[in-house]
Image (cartoon, rainbow over the protein chains, first blue to last red):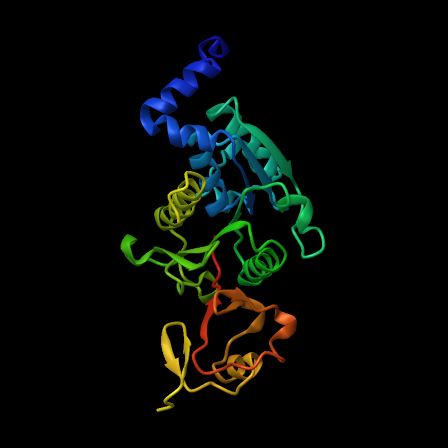
Length: 214
Length: 68
């Protein structure tokens, strides 16, 4: 069966070192990232970090997979109706069998945020509504000023790929996106633009963990 | 032009003496969709009405838009 062909842990690590270098691999295999929202941004960030050899991901989302998500989110048609956080665990285990995963089918609020964020080295904001983004960013910056936070704003619409940027806002806070293209203004959501923004977030997280963001 | 402006999102603004809440209202920001950093530190939403902008302050108003 397919199971027999899954490379062992050593083979996985060896391959990662070959492609990413020992130093980055060593740092990633000790790091925990919480991904707040696993929709278009978060599911893509998760897959990037899992493939890169992150030690542990904490996945939080209260939503279930919908047919309208399949156009840009990393779920399968067979998973429609399943809680996203749990569906993503299944998919990540197929990609990166040795990753540690913690999944919560819950909504993050100012009151319960500690439970999800406290043990993470980096917080990834990957919500969809501006209000939820604002709540999380304010709460993390106020309660955990020493923690790294990577957020996103502005990846809707049909502008070219280069309009999406990563900006360092303050010592531990990074913002990815074009800052303006708002899906609530009736703009389209195209998978490549959402994925580009997710890739900005994932790369920034890897750079932070690798000590390349100073 | 104010000779001692506040730098807000990279631009000089004659906002010294205003509270954060006053400035945000004047610029039509929805406070439920933003985060405000003043001199690289977060300003808690509960303090918007108290914190008075001073000449030379560097302020970043991060305005979140929908999509993700």
